[in-house]
Image (cartoon, rainbow, N blue to C red):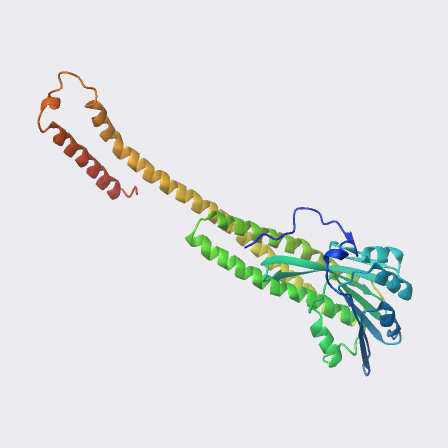
Amino acid sequence: MHRNKKRYSKKVIPTPIGAEKEKREEITKIHVINYDEKTFDDKETLNINEALSAVNKSNMTWIKISGIQDASIVESLGNFFNLHPLLLEDLSEIGQRPKIEEFGEYVLIVARRLYYDEIENELKDFQISIIMGDLFLISFQEQEDDIFNTILDRIVKSKGRIRQMGVDYLIYRILDAIVDSYFVLLENLSKKIDIVEEILLTSSSPENIRSINNLKHDVLYLHKSFWPLREIINSISRLELPYIKESTHIYFRDVQNHIIQIIDSIDLFREMLSGMYEIYMTSVSNRLNQIMKILTVISTIFIPLSFIASLYGMNFRYMPELYSPIGYYVVLVVMIFIGIFMLIYFKKKHWF
């Protein structure tokens, strides 16, 4: 597995929209959806003025913006909806930590969309910012993504109760879609962990420890990006906004249950990876012990043989064996016998 290009240990510094405009190729797409229980209208455009002219303030409006690069779009939205300057400032920065902030009658929610790029085989993410008002909701995505396609389909085909409900139900569906996307990510992580675990049982290659460390970084970044969503859901109930109905809280509690499941899975993955790291270190240690055992056995066998060889290498004048015609062969047979005897003895003792 290739190492994710992000440096997870470093603090993410928010970057103004447009600061890296030259490096990104996404086109800003604006999708305006006006709907109520009986009517529906949508408009797709690349121009913010055309999009704002399509807003129907008497109906529920969802302005979905993807691939935002132009700061003037944020400014135009701020003027049209009379948004707080601090909200616009937060909205203009990418790379933020997930959070929820109240600005009078508006609420800003920032979340992270994480996914595995199967082509580059690495964990990637982008920011999703959401402004929630009384009869409107504005979502910003750093790049084009299909995470909200199911919600759009339900609105277009009037499936379920989404057309009968207000902004509170829509924000529930959006947060639920973001949370559900983490289940897909966890499934991919689980498969990668299983693969590394199987390889680890048969090999103690240094590549294994790199794979484990990469997975640990991915899980850690996933934990940092996902954990604040729990506080976001809790805060929605505590803010006591007039357009968040009491009947909708049960849906947010369902999302909270999903969040708890994901957090438990993330904690389980962290424990599994820690255990795999210990297995790897134990495997390396056992392999080293096995090598040391073999070297010790070889050294032990050659100790008496070296003693015999050194004894007859002293070249004293009156050593009778030196003048025997079969002395060399006798000593050689004795040395071979001693080596074989020690090998048989070590084998019976299961020392190797």
